[in-house]
Amino acid sequence: MDILDSTSTIRNRADRADGGYAGLDGARFDDSFVRELPGDPQTRNVPRPVHGACYTRVDPTPVRAPRLLAWARETGDLLGIAPPPVPDGEAAQVLGGNRLLPGMRPYAARYGGHQFGHWAGQLGDGRAITLGEIACPDGLRREVQLKGAGRTPYSRTADGRAVLRSSVREFLCSEAMHALGVPTTRALSLVATGEAVVRDMFYDGNPRPEPGAVVCRVAPSFVRFGSFEILAADGETEVLRRLADYVVRTHFPALGAPSAPVYAQWFEEVCRRTGVLIAQWMRVGFVHGVMNTDNMSILGLTIDYGPYGWLEGFDLGWTPNTTDAQGRRYRFGSQPEIARWNLERLAHALAPLVGDAAALAQGLAAFDAAFHAAWREALADKLGLAALGQVGDEALLGDLFELLQRVETDMTLFFRGLMHVPLEDAADALDGAARVEPLRPAFYDGEILASGHHGVLADWLRRYAARVREDAGAPDGTAFMAARHARMQRANPKYVLRNYLAQEAIDALEQGDSSVLERLMEVLRHPCDEQPAHEALAGRRPEWARHRPGCSALSCSS
Image (tube, rainbow, N blue to C red):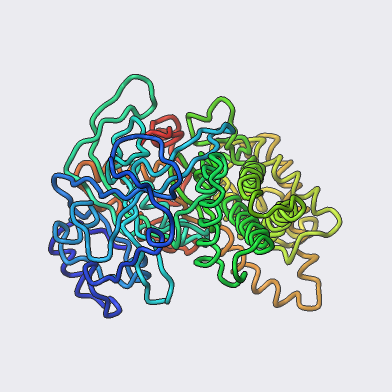
């Protein structure tokens, strides 16, 4: 990932190997979604109900002075696009929404959704506009979408714009999650608009102008659960069938020609992918914050980065979303339950096509199986065990989660520290203090290990060490121990996009300093590696960030 901070820097970087790719204006755009699916017959770009359509054709609204702030080189390579040579050239015009390229037929998608457990009716792309699909070097097609590109018929009372802070967070997190191995949409670019956007960050009657920005998002598809829900809710069964057929043919071709049994198989695959996705969120301590059905990808990707966060003090009940602060519907520990609930809503929408409640129930069972298998595998990897399932493992896990919640314990640092906990027989070679010492950085209260918690933790670590030695005592124990450290390192990142780190990058960028963002991007490219020069980015959240806006909880405002 490269930050584009000055003309000279951009030119130097553009001179590097770029795989022989052409610039953005050389990309081959297509429009299969628009060609193959019914569109809105009206062209008025005003907020209104839309019926009998999957999308509305609408162009981005031009901005005053688009300027490229950041470019994700890996995503550019994925699309076969070389880095732009200058920050205010043609690429910025396209990615800021001021110019269209041949083959682009921009549109805003229509969808509905359940928000915080209640049917919200028509929602749709209120500030996102898909430019088209690019045929990529790997043979796949990926949609390119601008978020913050202006009003659409789905904007309701909003202006269709996005502020710099939310755009930076989405740009950073999309690529950070990919580096962590979590299925996700990607980000290609971050463009400043040169215009102010007025937002009330916490809906508390204090709106203020903020710098505007547009982030370019990339995914094979941005179709979500709510894309099907709105069609089912409005009784548009034929359009529902056409959308399902398009998705199956385009994104699940191995299932065969669309039919009722194939729809059921497809739903089962969506359930399976969603189960794996949620397990990966849990593995790294990620909390999405707004798991409405309109924010759930039909491809099992993380989509729509709003008020997200990573667990810092481990708390199954934590949510980063101030809008959810009272009910905590989308708290960390409930994410599997909510994902299943959302899949049930999708099953209800697809029922007219499948016609077999048992087949849909089988899909939901596939979610349960996929999540539990992936989560157990992730936990085994995080703990450095060959597998979970031995007598006593459930108690070991249950006691661990209780310990993590008993005092404020940083999840990322605790599991990373487990890699370094000595495993010798404590009774013969090691006292409890030495065993606990590698975990000291994980505790927010520096005096906690002088309390009774020290003994409880030391006792758990003795049990844990004995459990690891059981694996090492198998016939291939030597090989197991040799590989254990590498497995734990891959499963337990050292660097995650803590909210305060993102806020520091936002603050600096608002002052014209891109170096903080550039450093953070570079570190997050290799989240599981030891990077001694950047050790400060791996530490606990500082006390000053505990309650500062943007560093702890966030709202849905952008």
